Length: 321
Image (cartoon, rainbow, N blue to C red):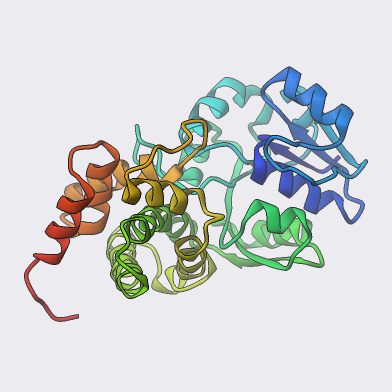
């Protein structure tokens, strides 16, 4: 077993299925022993990825020691859980290639996946896999292109080769910061796009929101040292388009519920909610103007209403584009 996935949610299960479909043996770690036993026996993850059958080459286990036999570990856990997972099991998984698959910023440290990995597991090879993708599409074998970011380009090329399939195409970059910021920040803008549509403001307003949101993403990312071409690629612009225009996006659906004043399933992970709060703090520290992100952070905390947020954004001073 060369590859394992830590996290048996929808995206983790989909990655395991996609990598195993062409004969690769893949380990899949589920935190809950009961869930692991059920998925292994039934050969499907009906709760998170209904209708998808796991290939026989996927082995499901609740034991970290089992999946740690693989040299490449894909960390498909929510961003706010990643640090705790690494800290708890670093003795077993340090010195591996650890690839973060979360799209977010740690609320406690303000760091992205690769920085969290590097700090907790200093012997590991940190990388991030991100870009425009829905778990259901990957699991069904639909063509998908993603960004694999690794600061060590030679070792990144080896990971790119190991993780690419005939329908899962990976593009490589050494700009880990840009890749992870693009994936994190687009979730915030996706929530905002959902708010716009849920509040009935229309497609024209959503297009404007996406454009100004992309400008915000670039302002912060470039100020922190990311490369502009990374934000213009799959992990930034590409993912932004997907998540702001499809109801498959949990961040978009969460925003849509906010816009309509409806409740949202509290068991669903919405990375953009925590990211909005973390990024609004970062923006303040660095003096970066991010009005959309600031408004979403306030909406998530119920400090303002949707009507207040719309009014505040529309009453900002007129300026050059």
